Image 1 (cartoon, rainbow, N blue to C red):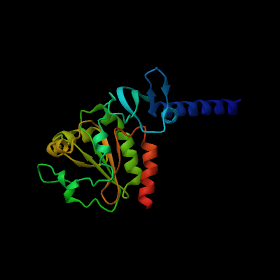
Image 2 (image 1 turned 60 degrees about the vertical axis):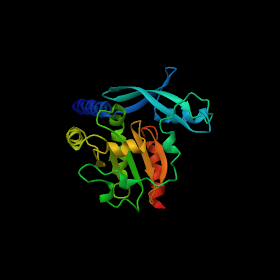
Image 3 (image 1 turned 90 degrees about the vertical axis):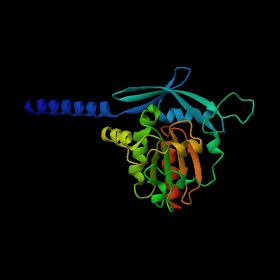
Image 4 (image 1 turned 180 degrees about the vertical axis):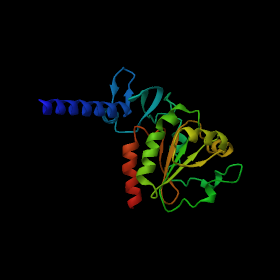
Length: 232
């Protein structure tokens, strides 16, 4: 009888531990315009079913809970028709794929910047963000996950127009494990960055390979692509 009671108590404790662990895991879901809520894999499958071309999504609203993040999204099939009413804020940057990214132009007012470090010889993920950008903050855990996975093999750089004071104050509250270039509004404006976040995947020769908005939906495929680039 004592043995049965002890086992029952142990099972109860294990259930509580499991429930606690599950409650702390934050999962991202995507709510479509028709009201359907999909997990990551369902969302990716749904996008692939829409078209063989480029399908992108914009986050309209984000709701957070202790165990989940729900992004209300608008899915758009990028249309090459010049009469299309759709505005793709990253189109001009996608047209730069294959071109060299001008790293040396992103130098802050204190003369620190990309030209201080040799970023060639490794793939580079560049994130344009700012500290009051909600979607930027939501994707940071996914960026940190990539940084942890490829630390030492890939360069991870975050660029913002915020001054270093605001960035350092933000980093005191939330980990963002990239190299940070701050206070470079003139360079950001000159490069035409108007939507945040924007992520650029750069190859070992400094050329743009891919352009993303947020990488939440793409982080698994991005991880696989980084692995291929590292192993080239």
